[in-house]
Length: 69
Picture (cartoon, rainbow, N blue to C red):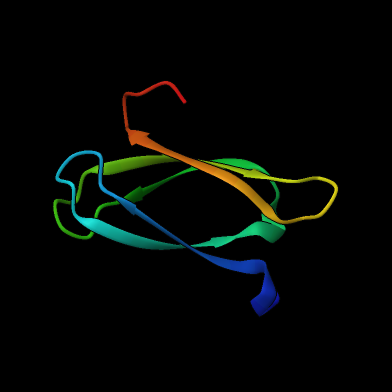
């Protein structure tokens, strides 16, 4: 894994609205994952979209565990 493949992603927890920063590894390509909120420990669903052409982060969708992303 290269340092340039790591991207900081800032957003707010969909449960408690705490500001969070997660480190995303774009070398994995587009994928879905779950991370726990550092404040309320609730599971946050993340859908990461990486451009197949450039390998750069296109978008991140974050939602509650039971949301459909």
